[in-house]
Structures are given as C-alpha cells and as structure tokens.
Length: 136
Image 1: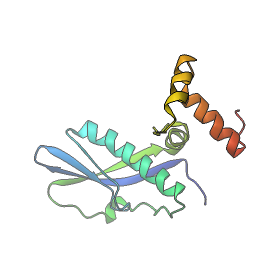
Image 2: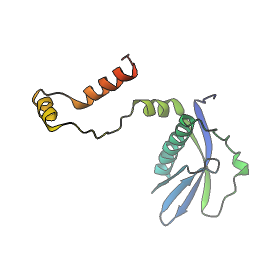
Image 3: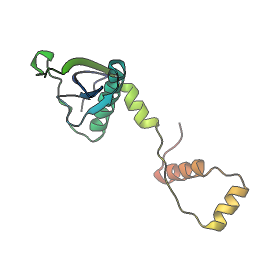
C-alpha cells in the first residue's frame, strides 16, 4: 500500500444548536464536533489524521477525496478543505502508550515495591525480550 504524507479532504461543517458538527463525505465514520469555527478546523484535522492512519493500520483502502464542486450542501452547511501532515499521526500512533492492568501475587508486589522497581519498565523489558525486540 502506498502511504501518502499529506491528505487534503473536503469536510462538511454543519452548524446546529450553537455548535458545529464536522463530517467527511468521503470517509465513513470520520466525525467530530466543536463550539467554534477555529476549534472545528483543529478537531477536523485531528479526526482526519487519526481516521486515515487507523485505516492504513487495518490495511483498508483510503478513498480519494471528492472535488469541492461535487460536494452537495444544505443551508446550514459549508465545505472546508482540511489538510493534515500524516507522518505526525503515524508517529503518535507508534509512540503512544496504553494502560494495562496486570495481576501479581501479593508477596511479589510487596518485594518489588520495597525494592523500588518500576513495574512498567519491567513489563516492557519482559515483553521486548519475549518478542525478540531490541532497544534502539
């Protein structure tokens, strides 16, 4: 799959009830919302980048963007071109962390805490070792 570095897609900004809903006609489920136009642009960029990278990671096809002239709008809508630099979103995806709950015997927990061990570091080291991953 050929990954693009810059994505530019038309977004629909729908103004209702004092807020703005952001949708992307070409990207099903890529939705955000905001209280102001400035916030809507920020949230749209975040939604677009996250959607594309998540779909790349799943091996799904990324649809091409529509031409602005092909996007049909209602009275309370406007079309805004949203652009994102995707390498930033890809790096965030790789460098992020997730919280995992683990269970250890009480006696082991007591000894580890007395020794001042960092459970996260030890778990990461153990997982890397088990998977054959070396630190860079």
